[in-house]
Image (cartoon, rainbow, N blue to C red; front, side, top):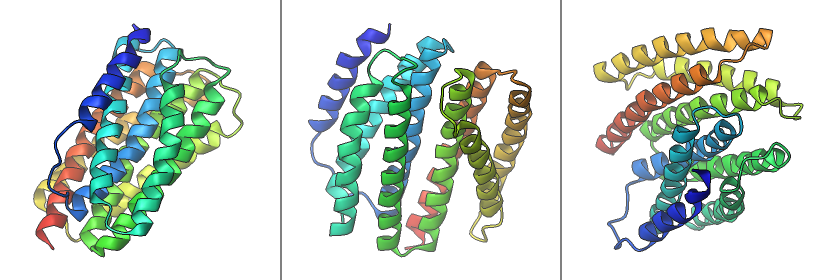
Length: 261
């Protein structure tokens, strides 16, 4: 199953590259797309580790393939959007790392090379974060900050699951538990920040209530890791449910940002 990913992903990438030129995306959509790159980079590492730990392998293979295609599509749109030199430089840095990361992510998962995969995932995350910050700075919009914050929650849903899987696989990385705890704490701070945003509509507040309930369920599963009782299938399923809810929330913030211009 895993070996067929390479040609499929490359085909999807070529198809994305051959799409006709579209109208330039808005600042709000650019923040969302760049923020999505953060999430996709973590999701790719999560899918790689799902395959390595034999956790819902068919789903992981599908997610890996679609995530790689989405990174390629977003990169093309952001390249067409790039509004200044700082944004173009940040995009170039992320793209260079992406080429290395993609090549490794498409190999058969292996515990020995997982450290390098996680290192590249971390670098791509940092560079994508820098890209988001440059676009948000260019937009000068407070609403764009909410798109960024919500989009970062989307990334954290996948980062938390990725780090949980790395601990499940007992990878020889000393920082895994600390990074996991930090991601959980950041998710809670971000949720609190979004709940307090004065720009929230009734619909957004309802979505935040649903996300909060899903998050509390996820936290119950995390506590089992303290006793080395890992439940990767539960955590993967919960993180994907969170992702879907936060994706819709981010789109609503993007629309809010677009209407406030």
